[in-house]
Image (cartoon, rainbow, N blue to C red):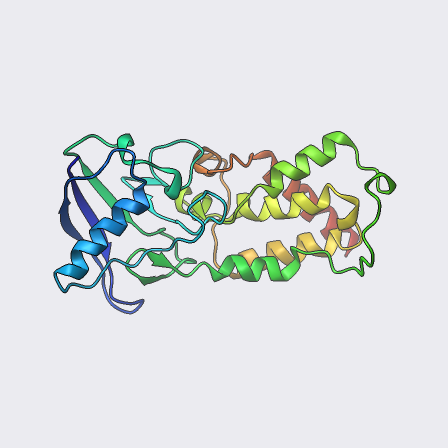
Length: 248
């Protein structure tokens, strides 16, 4: 298979970037998108050119590092999949593919396709944890949790923090990510002691990082590789409102 690639190249965070044209052929349709980029980089290195910088780690759809905007969609055209789970058979032979980094003020470009997503780390540090002395692990049956709550908490915990929600949102909102992290702990008894301060601190940090607000467009849920639901945003808003009233 042969493709015409238009790849965003940017030397560093202070320089201007642009789309650069590349042509690549002899691509196996069962090759992953990241493997295709590996082949392209190998070709560039052999020519003495600078390889394309892009994030990757597990390549199993677990870590969320493979943050690429592909032909106008976060993680590409495949539904509920990360870039590393995307295969070249999803693209038409001879077609043109646009490859860009996440586009958000709060995710500044470091180089080429690599963005700085440390804003998410600071939001988690603001309250996305349980700071209690757990001691020895309890027997599972000694900590009863309603089945419905446990399932909702697990669904929220599936968020891998890739940032696709931010990249897909026209407002660059991070509410789907933040609400998933708040919901995960708000639904479990372990998160109860810090429930109120957690909601306030994480939402305030999200605002401080410069992310936009949610206007219920739904692009975040549509592009999320883990199918995190918008209902988590409603829960986050309730948590924040209640915490604000209690702390007045």
